[in-house]
Image (cartoon, rainbow, N blue to C red):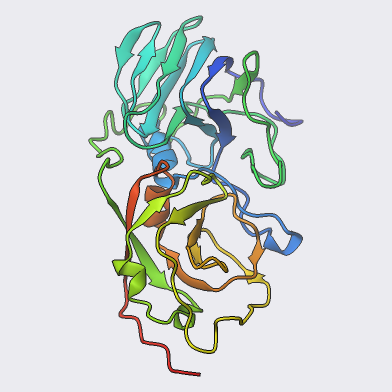
Length: 305
């Protein structure tokens, strides 16, 4: 909370955290000039869906969950769980995902480990009202900015409920498909250094999987290395700006896709940029998941240099 904010409407007491639980909103864009990346929800589509189902602004913060979480309501709250499909219950009574439900005062909301996908999102009416840092309530795992990762014993203030329809829900359930367990195709726009590859078509024909050391900063691929064009084998790129979804090819030749907590600049060629939708899909991928890339424009072969 900040000076001048209304008193919290309710609170969520953290009882258990599985792998990782972070407060996230849509991040702090526009601060690259001071070395701060946007951060924010890794799966923005899931975050926005939660806000829409609660009839509130998507700028409000929620909780991004990896591996489950248990939260006790201190004051009754209306909540919704989106993103990776998982078992959800209120005091051991099952409730659905992608649909709002009530968590009465004193009862426990439990979000389980997903069967497919990686990140689930808990949104509450009124939003998580922790103190913002540089205009955002998001935790950035690269810089450490924002509220720290959640731990048992933490208490999260819930803001005063609002809504564009006077508190009446416009949508009561969203029949959206959950993350796929099969190969995922990610759409890629050509990047500024696509011609640094000997054959850009290999981006789409190579078989990739998600490496184990992937996180909110980026997804590392595992698979056959890409070859650089003749004359580019030992060339270097001056440090240049990066965006969410940038597909960078480091010296190893195996691509990296940058996600929400990406660095502001990088020094390897960016051969493509994932679409917004593809970034959301990528945020749900677990280690070992197969990936296919689809270029949205026909690549031109690099000229010999």
